[in-house]
Amino acid sequence: MSALEAVVQEADEWRTAQSQFDQAAAMLNLEPEMREILREVQREFTCHFPVEMDNGHIEVFTGYRVQHNINRGPAKGGIRYHQDVSLDEVKALAMWMTWKCAVVNIPFGGAKGGIIVDPRRLSLRELEHMTRRFATEISILIGPDRDIPAPDVNTDGQIMAWMMDTLSMHAGYSITASVTGKPVEVGGSLGRIEATGRGVMICALAALEHLGIKAHQARVAVQGFGNVGSVSAKLLDEAGCTIVALSDQYGGIANQQGLPMKKVFQHFAQDRRLEGFPGAEKIGTADPLVYDCDVVVPAAVGNQFTSKNAEQVKAKLIVEGANGPTTPEADEVFNRKGIFLVPDILANAGGVTVSYFEWVQDLQSFFWSEHEVNEKLHAIMSRAFNEVLETSLERKVPMRMAAYCKAVGRVASATRERGIYP
Image (cartoon, rainbow, N blue to C red; front, side):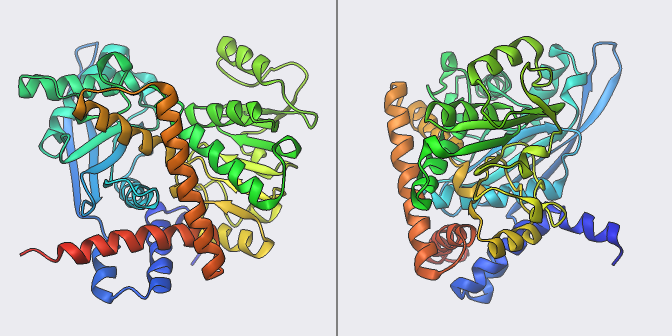
């Protein structure tokens, strides 16, 4: 295998997802038949659909919706708009969603979706038309009792509102529980926007406590300044941590003495990028990953920690805000170096947990206060972290494998109890 082929293979999310599952399956001594069932997705749906652009030209887009496993409940998972979306990526993300829902023990299976598109080149009208057409294409799969989409990369509450409205128009009545991550005005939940970042913060503080590091002693670097990264940085700063490095898609900023987060947010709101913030050192997009700090939060995209940069990581703690930011090769390095890592299927499960709350509220037509939402989120995330930590210590395995053991064990048990149809 050439060096280039090795790099491409290491960056293959589906290979990573299956490799992680295989390790957990071996640890749990899963029967061969169960391994065959759980290491593959249940459904793959690909569609090619036309959209009329503003200039009258017809463009055909490719979209995917994948369901990995629905034995514990309806499928749940986001929809991303990105030019690099692929079927293998969506399959991996769907599998990770199954484990994510299981590790925090909420009654969903895993799904994911996406469209191959750079949404920045679309007008608002084109974006809406593409969203509504895609919602129509996947309407044969989704619904409040079957498969509930949510926002992901480059999608937001507005896009979810368009999807929900499209499904409702087809049905002839409002189906608010058909998607989550919606604006509050159309059945969204308070606290949903901050939920993933809040879950990262809860896990980070719990891990620091386990490691004997006080929050005010912790220096934190965050890669990614979207919804997850920015909220994680804000809440960790409010908890007493010192944020020393940040980056977005254009570049980053750093200051060993700490970045004044209120001023950083003001600067970002004005310039829409971190670069140029006064009194900070200019760094690259990936530099927070290897910055001199105690805690790193990768909150951008997948495959950020690889065999190429894992040895350079200086942090004692990694809390994965992004999905699949670490390859198995990098995991081996972190385990050898004794770096404590809170895996993505646990650390960023706050988003799907509050999506679960939103779904429940929509079905009941009874809504909770933001304080209630945050309290319930804290209880679920703390319980899940402690369960995974206990498994890690008992089995003497890293946190990722402990999380997988909890999650895969729960899904395998549900599959056995239900049996094989017919």
